[in-house]
Length: 346
Image (tube, rainbow, N blue to C red; front, side):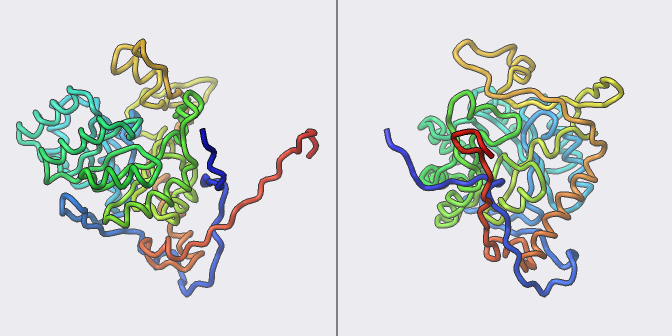
């Protein structure tokens, strides 16, 4: 057993230090990015925010709303749509704003193979597992890369630099970073495993960029300022779950209680998700997610305006004319939190 003594930070532990700026307006800030991916060789241009591949978030309706918004935002579709519906969506809307998602089970890979065999043309693939540290996962990623060299692959999740490096060398273009920070994830409570998200982003970005790879900060953002902190810490993409839940695009049943409207939102390792998609929780595992009620938020367009407006505003405070420059303009100030002493006095 060993203990790392160095302080690790979450988004709540820091604030941006403001700096002089020549920017006159938020409208002068360019929050789009352009990337050329290491392995697929393809390029991306747009606002690098991705809706998570979760029920209620990674939906067809969300993807259509993102396309309509027009900023190049993208959606990682959840993996439980029937293949016929996926085919129709790609035919009608194209592949530019969506990530096709799979796990490591045979049915997921077989479904992807069949989709491509039928003429489907996904150009971006999200390989999503809870624990990206297994040797089996690395070998799986290598096999998918060899089978589909033209696909841009995002895969994870991990939280340490050495594993980011291994996945990039295995053929991953974008490594998903985050274990346990999500609002409906209970991995940290159930297993004691995790890593403070801001420190994970900073350390993993450093590892990825040294090899020409990219990272996606996945989880832990509850307000627009957290998204800005992720980009300030070096994230190339940011994935959102709870911040995009509860909208018309969630494709969830609207529930009314005591005159208030709600939508369900749940982790994909929760009892709710496993009962819905797998017929129950397997006897060898425990649920690592929870189900919550999200107040109905209406159309996602207003939330997107808040998110993108907040990001632009951050850039004006630190003098970053482009999102690309935000991490270079960032100085984080650690926040000292008042806590009770051992005698319970404040």
